[in-house]
Length: 393
Image (cartoon, rainbow, N blue to C red; front, side, top):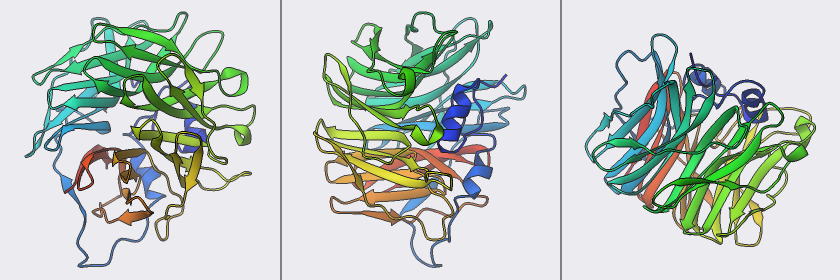
């Protein structure tokens, strides 16, 4: 049994997973969707700034993908995701890079769980990482999952689920220290949903936090979060309106006591990821859909401590549609964003420019990126149903 559906596009993707499916899967069917966003390849002989890294595929996997990456040191990264086994069941996947190669690391599965997936990971050092996601139990319920890497192995950390929830998902996590992590996601029950929620790790246990009401009848999801400091986090996602055209991006900020809505610059339909270097310096990426229909176009927004503002960003030449799924800022003046294509764009403090990424037969997508400096980044995703990792150095 597969926990997640194939990745869909924009609001249609999010609406689909909430209407009876689960979280997006960066695996089966992904390449077909990515092909629609391909553009002309760089001129022959022009050097590539990104290079492809060999990533292993789990034994018996029919399809696999990496959904999140975090580098606790310049030469040490953790990547997480999922794969489908021969029975079609989605299973946990975690890989580690130690400066030479990627290797698969064993991940425990709680008793009673039949499958699961990781959606995000955050590392504060080479020996301290936290990954979050969801598990499907034998009774069909879907529950939250968190595991911690201690430099040797992954260990399960018990996570609560909202009262009355039938399905609970953790999609993103950010750790300001080994004793302070915040994870975000959403849940649904027989009477309501989707409703966003957050959980906080205090070094001993995870506890649920209520997020701010947002969207039509308080229907919203949070997909990613970034905490530059303790008691300071920014989360992004989608707030659902009564019609597709009234659905828009959601942004919420944690001040150590409460989550508060921070209105994004209109029009933006989906924010997929966010990266903050300071409470007043955040960058979020996603996509917008033209009112009345049409292909999506990538969106980048910047938070200055008071408001969000849209930043001008180039669209790849010849692209029919474009999207950005991940972003990482090593400082206030340098950020890297990635998406389908594969696509990578860089912010130098003044403007965004497209970076050259290797051409892949059949296309591919980069779902997440982590930068330790402006010249050291790792990005992960999938290509042709297999894990994909690229390195900028």
